[in-house]
Image (cartoon, rainbow, N blue to C red; front, side):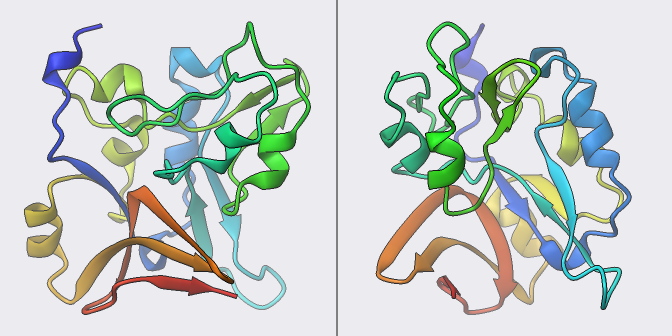
Length: 189
């Protein structure tokens, strides 16, 4: 793989309010050959009994990934570009520690494979200068892969946030959530 074409200025941005629940991202992700035709992105209903509002769930690629920290088999790694990779098939023992530890609820244990699988931000694509599959097909712009200048131009009333507060813990991530302009963090209760 040619890692020199990885653009460090491009980032992943998620605008939860723009998700329309079309699941185009899930279908595009499932087409990726590196996932075994399994979607690593998930569209969820916020409160299905009360609203049709949906939201998209992707790996946030934490600066200090708790999923990797709790893995007793050292199967999950983070590379020099900040991508937290899915479990190494030769090392993963299917214990689900990562599934239980992730504050964002992202890793899923695929029972068919007895393996943890999650979004790798289409590393096979982004490492050679292409955009993640999900971001190329999202019709509403809920998922965007580009520069901060581009997202600022597209969403002048929003601010990308990648700092999340869980109780007394702060989790910083590679992926950004779009918040009202001027926001610096998202407090999760």
